[in-house]
Image (cartoon, rainbow, N blue to C red; front, top):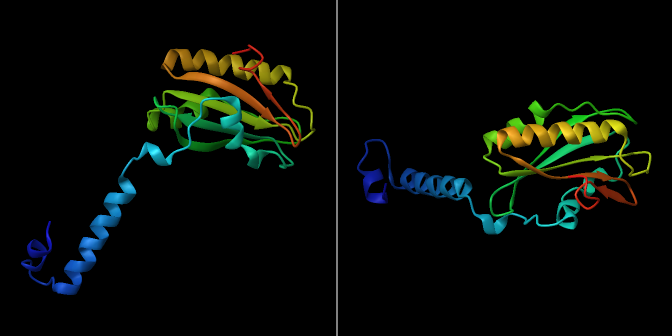
Length: 161
C-alpha cells in the first residue's frame, strides 16, 4: 500500500500512515533472505569459525550447522547438552531443523571438555547413525567436528565420512 492508500482509510492520519509504511519496510527487510549476508561454509576451517563458542565449555554441547545449496550457513542450533564425558543425541533432533529450514547439508559438532579431540566409540556410532539417516532424508552430513580448547578432530578430514 502507498501513503495515499493508507490515508484514505478512516482513522489513519498522516502520522499513522508514515508509521505503518515504516513498519511495512522493516518487516520486508527482516523477511528478506539475502545469501550475501550469510557465512559461507566450504571447509572444516569455515565450520570451526562458527563453533569457537564450544572451546571453553565444561559440559559436552552438541551443535548442528544447517547449510543451503549455496554452502551458506542458514541456521545453527544447540541440539543437546550432556555431562563432562557424554552427550545423548538422536537423529530426530538433528534433522528436524534441517527439514524445517530446507537445509541440503549439515555439519554436526560437539566439544570434548577433557581436551582430547579423539572420537569415542559413541562418537563413531552417532556419526554413522546420522550419516545413514541423512541418506534416507536426502540431507548430506558433511562433517562431524570435535572441538577442544586447543585442537579439533574432523571426521571428514580423516576420511571417516
